[in-house]
Image (cartoon, rainbow, N blue to C red; front, side, top):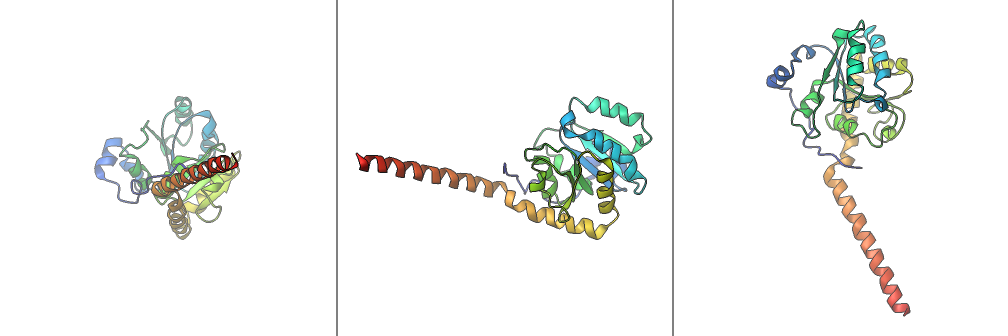
Length: 222
């Protein structure tokens, strides 16, 4: 694991100043689905957009996409031409480690990651550290973070209906959402940056010992 600073993303409140700065105070009173990260082709966000009207048939939710990328303007245009244009907000870009980033996670009720080629997905780790239930594509490294039915749902990355059904299940079931939230915070503990640094150090120490032992064996044979 790359590790994550759990202290930076621990749960807290969303400030009024934050809401006013980004002009998103209207997002507070409705269920909010969050995506953070690059807005590029490989993130599979077009499937997420196809899922949105399906979700809205059951839940009056809002969707917040935080980030930037080559596909952003195209998606903004697509949303503006849709029937759900007032349900989707684009924000960003934000730099990694931006001090406002934790508040975006705290604002949300659920995190969604539609990309199925994630090598690890740092943003999913951030969402888990923030105590969010996760709906993620069943592909790449995401099954190593999201345990289906425990801290979220893994879904068919090519099926908007699968995303919609999973999102609806969580947003309409507070007890399920709470259970997933607690499990996200529990599972992410093993990715604490301090533990990861310690593990890396132990690996290097073990390699040095093996190298030293190998050299000693060569000298003894001579």
